[in-house]
Image (tube, rainbow, N blue to C red; front, side, top):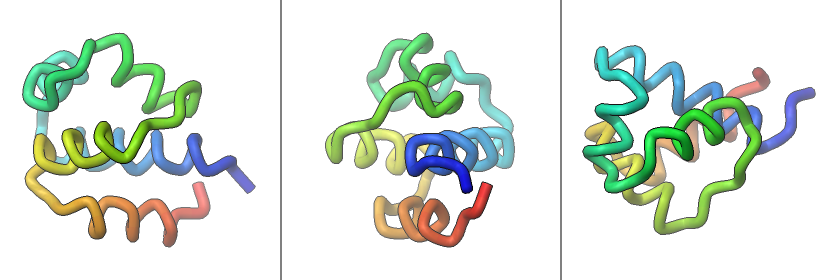
Length: 75
């Protein structure tokens, strides 16, 4: 089973692609560095709760919906 950071990254990538934005665009909207978004998507970094909030807002969703997707995700 994938690790929690890997599951978060897969959900983040899936949601980003669903709204049709690049990593760079998502990073800009969330106030993050584009390289950091890539690291998150690859499961190489664990986001803080503040970063989860920023990403959820940039994706047009809530933190609870984003994290519910992660919780349901098996990879």
